[in-house]
Image (cartoon, rainbow, N blue to C red; front, side, top):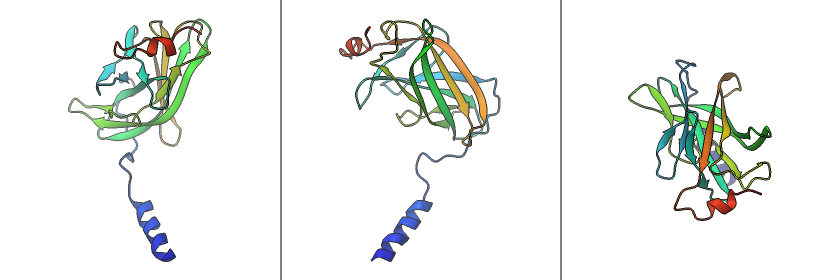
Length: 178
């Protein structure tokens, strides 16, 4: 019985998981678009001044679901490290690193999957590091992309405005001034 259980573990260990993808062969490192996800599974392109939704996290608090789209030839993955910084104090409000799972689109871009595990969930509320309310104020979003073994590809940033959704009555409390 023990040997059968061990054999099953060996077989299962060799089976790829849904999120295991080959590393991205980024075709153009100058073509990177920061993106955010929302509750409706839409991807929002980020440029300076973009309002991005604060999402109620399953474990509590509020997150920004952020990542990047890149020019790539197939479904692939990179590692993304994302942070939100208060430019008034230079303090980091939230930081997270995780695999960035990308799906090839017909336009040549590989864009993050629409799941919480496909791109960084930057926990920003509540935050003792902010000098003002997190929602409706401008902060610097930075996303660094690396290969799976840690080699740097590119770092991109934009000034963004985290925004509470009308349907989320607790967001203004959770993400308000401390």
